[in-house]
Image (tube, rainbow, N blue to C red; front, top):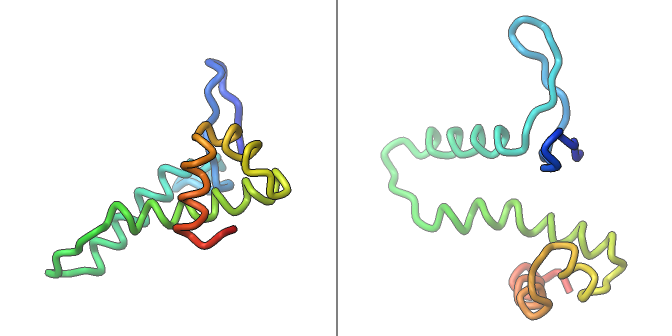
Length: 100
């Protein structure tokens, strides 16, 4: 869900949440990612993880590529433009996530 704010930036939201005092507000994607990261590290206990960046990036990037390709009906040029990346970069990422 996209919400426009006054300064022409777009905030990515994942839905509504109810706060402790009972009010409802939009939950930002970044808040969900932050909560997921805290949960992930809490579950590790004393383990030292590796490649955490790639883990989280893949969880966000793969579905973003998939839905963008769906919206663009498979047109890689249009999808790359929409994403703001080079078409060659898009092709590499699609191959990485096996989303041809």
